[in-house]
Image (cartoon, rainbow, N blue to C red; front, top):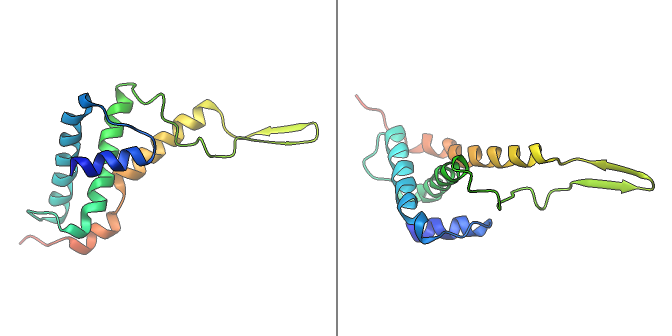
Length: 125
């Protein structure tokens, strides 16, 4: 599962280092435990693997962001930042928006798949 998470993170520009491995394991375990508690399961079904990867990536990125180690990552690199028409230039993206975009992306990853989890939720009597 760690290999899958590393590939998931590298798909949008974060290359894992050797020092990241212990926290990758922790993020996977935390995501798995959260899903199991929410769904009242003892083991995660294979159909929820992508949800778990997404949530583990969110946990990992939140930790890295809180440590101040995500400066080189920018999820809004491909976003339109400004338009120039003649003498007029309109700028859409500023530094605060770029940081906010990363926060929004991390929150998206942490809560991704909630609708899918309801399909696997079991009632405890």
